[in-house]
Image (tube, rainbow, N blue to C red; front, side, top):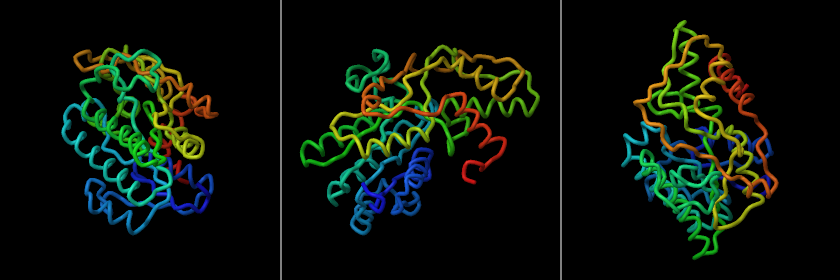
Length: 313
């Protein structure tokens, strides 16, 4: 992949895709190919085939996906399964048909069993039952990993899969019904502070342990893997560090400066008890994350709520 290679970033308006665009531009890759979902519906087989026939990208970052938090995953189960299956199937197959030199598929740590041994190694996939609330999304992502693996095996393609841990950063989703835990907590505590509220309700018990990676670190990892990794097995991307949701809430409360109390709504689902990735494989290749959690949350809070748009100035 050289600086003038034609690189297609699928899902470039999303949090991950936009971060990959930033990372590629920072490394002086100049021939970037993008389409919005209105311009190209990746669930439509013929539209994707026509796009690849016309544009002939050399490299593909497949970051397009239908994503959401626990409630969204549990509510729109068929949509999450169908749309993600269609997008990845169409893009991966057409990448094969039109001779893409290398493709990176973005999976998710939810592909691993709910009670996987911690930290979770790449070999844990398909070794146990999935977390029920996001099983359809996880199955779609597992299918994407297996598509890459088997196009490699059958056709000799160089298609790889990266499994990021929980992400946060610019262009995240702050809709309380559909967002993940970190952006939801940022919004809740910020709005509570602005309204001079005395308390904030947080879903669950606060006991589950989670790992968080800044999306700009993920994007740099994706570029690194495109240059330095080939193989049938997926590769984890994370920090190797986790904390409880309770400690995350306390950290965000402190960063924002909210002085009230936290009320834990234990009627809401906790999800997987712990989800920490074993990142020794990518560490051994020479990549490690750079952005600490407190530093990253501080930056995101400033960009989103204090000085909107600062990241792109």
